[in-house]
Amino acid sequence: TRDLGRGMRIAESLESGMVGLNRGLVSDPAAPFGGVKQSGLGREGAHDGLLAFLETKYVAGNW
Picture 1 (tube, rainbow, N blue to C red):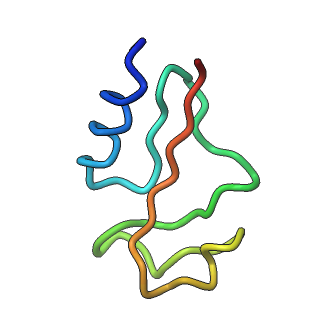
Picture 2 (cartoon, rainbow, N blue to C red; picture 1 turned 90 degrees about the vertical axis):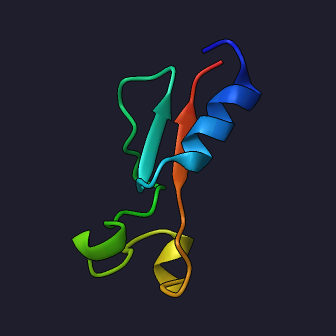
């Protein structure tokens, strides 16, 4: 998308742990990793590994 605001609104509305905007590879060593809902036991890695009580989302994009 060329519209960053629209891309971010869509990313925020998705129930997923990682979202890629205008890029094929979403994963990054600095990103927290873990499932959402019943699919995982929480996050590991990065700062978010300490925030198990929050539901976080990693959004990566190229503009």
